[in-house]
Length: 205
Image (cartoon, rainbow, N blue to C red; front, top):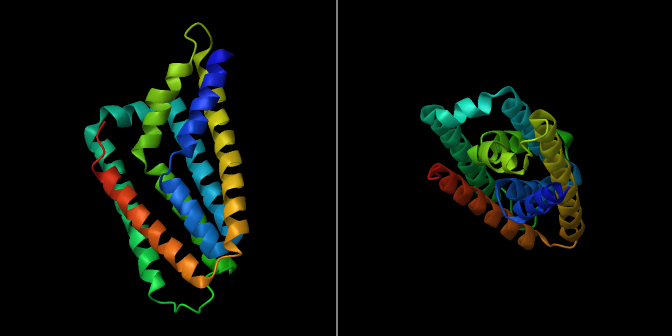
């Protein structure tokens, strides 16, 4: 029980560390409203479920042992984050300072899920979370599979709770922001995504 509580505490601390998921949730909530943020979270959580499933069937260990495959995933994720960041910054130039920055159309919200899903799925750090971090909290005297599933689903639940609160607060305060403030935040999140992409490209195990 103490180990499980420690896992929850540590997972919350990891969630609080700024990363690509947080930057995407921030940018998409501001640009596409609460639904855009929610779809981003849905994409992120779907990718986490995919990581959990891959880890359970043993494919993640293959990824960890294959440097070539690991690098393919790593650089694909890095390129994707840089692409989103550049696209975010470039989109700023297409709008004037007086334009309405919040695009609530359903068509333009659809890519939010894809961005959340792909950025998380192609992040090798998440793979290492399930392969190296999570097993440290498993009791070797009990059923490994059940514990692994419990810890993985717990992390998923914590992610849902954290990001639900996060986008709720962002959406609430973004309603009071003027276009210039939103323009600045979009610029900064675009730059952050590029930085996260570059960090991921140079990431080594």
